[in-house]
Image (cartoon, rainbow, N blue to C red; front, side):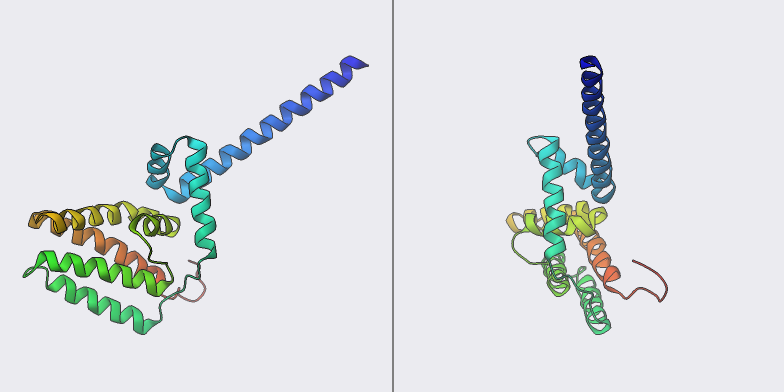
Length: 184
Protein backbone atom coordinates (compact mmCIF):
# COMPACT_ATOMS: atom_id res chain seq x y z
CA UNK A 1 0.00 0.00 0.00
CA UNK A 2 2.79 2.43 0.91
CA UNK A 3 4.53 1.60 -2.36
CA UNK A 4 1.37 2.43 -4.29
CA UNK A 5 1.05 5.78 -2.52
CA UNK A 6 4.70 6.51 -3.27
CA UNK A 7 4.20 5.61 -6.96
CA UNK A 8 1.16 7.91 -7.16
CA UNK A 9 3.09 10.77 -5.54
CA UNK A 10 6.08 10.30 -7.86
CA UNK A 11 3.77 10.10 -10.90
CA UNK A 12 2.04 13.30 -9.78
CA UNK A 13 5.40 15.08 -9.44
CA UNK A 14 6.52 13.84 -12.87
CA UNK A 15 3.24 14.98 -14.47
CA UNK A 16 3.44 18.39 -12.77
CA UNK A 17 7.06 18.83 -13.90
CA UNK A 18 6.15 17.76 -17.43
CA UNK A 19 3.26 20.22 -17.50
CA UNK A 20 5.54 23.01 -16.21
CA UNK A 21 8.17 22.29 -18.90
CA UNK A 22 5.53 22.24 -21.65
CA UNK A 23 4.03 25.55 -20.46
CA UNK A 24 7.47 27.17 -20.20
CA UNK A 25 8.35 25.98 -23.70
CA UNK A 26 5.05 27.32 -25.10
CA UNK A 27 5.68 30.68 -23.42
CA UNK A 28 9.22 30.77 -24.76
CA UNK A 29 8.08 29.92 -28.30
CA UNK A 30 5.32 32.51 -28.06
CA UNK A 31 7.80 35.22 -27.02
CA UNK A 32 10.24 34.18 -29.76
CA UNK A 33 7.46 34.30 -32.33
CA UNK A 34 6.20 37.68 -31.19
CA UNK A 35 9.54 39.45 -30.67
CA UNK A 36 11.73 37.78 -33.31
CA UNK A 37 15.32 39.01 -33.19
CA UNK A 38 14.46 41.29 -30.24
CA UNK A 39 13.92 38.11 -28.20
CA UNK A 40 17.52 37.08 -28.84
CA UNK A 41 18.88 40.59 -28.18
CA UNK A 42 17.00 40.82 -24.89
CA UNK A 43 18.06 37.35 -23.75
CA UNK A 44 21.69 38.13 -24.65
CA UNK A 45 21.68 41.34 -22.59
CA UNK A 46 19.72 39.97 -19.61
CA UNK A 47 21.29 38.29 -16.60
CA UNK A 48 19.51 35.04 -17.48
CA UNK A 49 17.03 33.63 -19.98
CA UNK A 50 14.29 33.78 -17.37
CA UNK A 51 15.09 37.44 -16.61
CA UNK A 52 15.02 38.31 -20.32
CA UNK A 53 11.71 36.53 -20.82
CA UNK A 54 10.27 38.37 -17.80
CA UNK A 55 11.41 41.67 -19.36
CA UNK A 56 9.63 40.81 -22.61
CA UNK A 57 6.46 39.77 -20.77
CA UNK A 58 6.57 43.05 -18.81
CA UNK A 59 6.83 44.97 -22.10
CA UNK A 60 3.70 43.24 -23.33
CA UNK A 61 1.84 44.15 -20.13
CA UNK A 62 3.06 47.77 -20.28
CA UNK A 63 1.96 48.21 -23.90
CA UNK A 64 -1.42 46.62 -23.14
CA UNK A 65 -1.99 49.46 -20.65
CA UNK A 66 -1.14 52.16 -23.19
CA UNK A 67 -3.97 53.82 -25.03
CA UNK A 68 -2.65 53.18 -28.53
CA UNK A 69 -4.84 54.43 -31.30
CA UNK A 70 -5.05 54.47 -35.05
CA UNK A 71 -4.40 57.71 -36.87
CA UNK A 72 -7.27 59.26 -38.69
CA UNK A 73 -6.86 59.49 -42.48
CA UNK A 74 -6.00 63.21 -42.33
CA UNK A 75 -3.19 62.56 -39.84
CA UNK A 76 -1.89 59.70 -41.95
CA UNK A 77 -1.89 61.94 -45.02
CA UNK A 78 -0.21 64.82 -43.16
CA UNK A 79 2.53 62.59 -41.79
CA UNK A 80 3.05 61.03 -45.21
CA UNK A 81 3.41 64.50 -46.77
CA UNK A 82 5.85 65.56 -44.07
CA UNK A 83 7.92 62.42 -44.66
CA UNK A 84 8.09 63.09 -48.40
CA UNK A 85 9.25 66.67 -47.70
CA UNK A 86 11.89 65.46 -45.22
CA UNK A 87 13.12 62.84 -47.65
CA UNK A 88 13.19 65.39 -50.46
CA UNK A 89 15.48 67.66 -48.45
CA UNK A 90 17.96 64.84 -47.84
CA UNK A 91 20.02 65.62 -50.95
CA UNK A 92 20.66 69.20 -49.86
CA UNK A 93 21.14 68.59 -46.12
CA UNK A 94 21.37 64.93 -45.06
CA UNK A 95 22.19 65.70 -41.41
CA UNK A 96 19.19 67.96 -40.92
CA UNK A 97 16.96 65.44 -42.71
CA UNK A 98 18.01 62.72 -40.26
CA UNK A 99 17.08 64.97 -37.33
CA UNK A 100 13.73 65.69 -39.00
CA UNK A 101 13.16 61.98 -39.68
CA UNK A 102 13.82 61.15 -36.02
CA UNK A 103 11.45 63.91 -34.90
CA UNK A 104 8.79 62.80 -37.34
CA UNK A 105 8.97 59.19 -36.15
CA UNK A 106 8.55 60.45 -32.58
CA UNK A 107 5.59 62.61 -33.63
CA UNK A 108 3.88 59.60 -35.19
CA UNK A 109 4.60 57.54 -32.10
CA UNK A 110 3.12 60.25 -29.89
CA UNK A 111 0.06 60.56 -32.14
CA UNK A 112 -0.44 56.79 -31.90
CA UNK A 113 -0.23 56.94 -28.08
CA UNK A 114 3.30 55.73 -27.38
CA UNK A 115 4.78 57.70 -24.50
CA UNK A 116 7.97 59.49 -25.44
CA UNK A 117 10.33 59.10 -22.50
CA UNK A 118 13.75 57.88 -23.56
CA UNK A 119 15.00 55.93 -26.53
CA UNK A 120 15.33 52.58 -24.74
CA UNK A 121 11.77 52.78 -23.40
CA UNK A 122 10.48 53.79 -26.84
CA UNK A 123 12.34 50.86 -28.40
CA UNK A 124 10.94 48.48 -25.78
CA UNK A 125 7.40 49.71 -26.40
CA UNK A 126 7.76 49.51 -30.18
CA UNK A 127 9.17 45.98 -29.89
CA UNK A 128 5.82 44.62 -28.74
CA UNK A 129 3.86 45.50 -31.90
CA UNK A 130 6.66 46.15 -34.42
CA UNK A 131 9.60 43.88 -33.58
CA UNK A 132 10.55 43.36 -37.22
CA UNK A 133 11.55 47.03 -37.66
CA UNK A 134 13.07 47.61 -34.23
CA UNK A 135 16.55 46.69 -35.46
CA UNK A 136 16.16 49.40 -38.11
CA UNK A 137 15.10 51.92 -35.49
CA UNK A 138 18.07 51.10 -33.28
CA UNK A 139 20.47 51.41 -36.24
CA UNK A 140 18.98 54.73 -37.37
CA UNK A 141 19.14 56.13 -33.85
CA UNK A 142 22.77 55.07 -33.46
CA UNK A 143 23.71 56.78 -36.74
CA UNK A 144 21.81 59.94 -35.74
CA UNK A 145 23.63 60.05 -32.39
CA UNK A 146 26.97 59.48 -34.12
CA UNK A 147 26.17 62.28 -36.57
CA UNK A 148 25.36 64.67 -33.71
CA UNK A 149 28.87 64.11 -32.29
CA UNK A 150 30.82 63.99 -35.52
CA UNK A 151 29.47 64.22 -39.07
CA UNK A 152 28.64 60.77 -40.39
CA UNK A 153 29.20 59.82 -44.01
CA UNK A 154 26.46 60.50 -46.51
CA UNK A 155 26.09 56.75 -47.00
CA UNK A 156 25.61 56.21 -43.26
CA UNK A 157 23.01 59.00 -43.20
CA UNK A 158 21.27 57.49 -46.23
CA UNK A 159 21.14 54.18 -44.41
CA UNK A 160 19.69 55.90 -41.33
CA UNK A 161 16.99 57.46 -43.53
CA UNK A 162 16.15 54.02 -44.93
CA UNK A 163 15.95 52.61 -41.39
CA UNK A 164 13.74 55.44 -40.16
CA UNK A 165 11.54 54.96 -43.20
CA UNK A 166 10.98 51.30 -42.34
CA UNK A 167 9.65 52.17 -38.89
CA UNK A 168 7.73 55.20 -40.17
CA UNK A 169 5.99 53.10 -42.82
CA UNK A 170 5.19 50.39 -40.29
CA UNK A 171 3.65 52.92 -37.91
CA UNK A 172 1.58 54.50 -40.68
CA UNK A 173 0.53 51.23 -42.30
CA UNK A 174 -0.60 49.78 -38.99
CA UNK A 175 -2.48 53.02 -38.37
CA UNK A 176 -4.52 52.73 -41.56
CA UNK A 177 -7.97 51.22 -41.16
CA UNK A 178 -8.14 47.56 -42.08
CA UNK A 179 -10.27 46.81 -45.15
CA UNK A 180 -13.75 45.56 -44.28
CA UNK A 181 -13.85 41.88 -43.42
CA UNK A 182 -10.14 41.63 -42.57
CA UNK A 183 -8.27 41.54 -39.31
CA UNK A 184 -5.03 43.22 -38.43
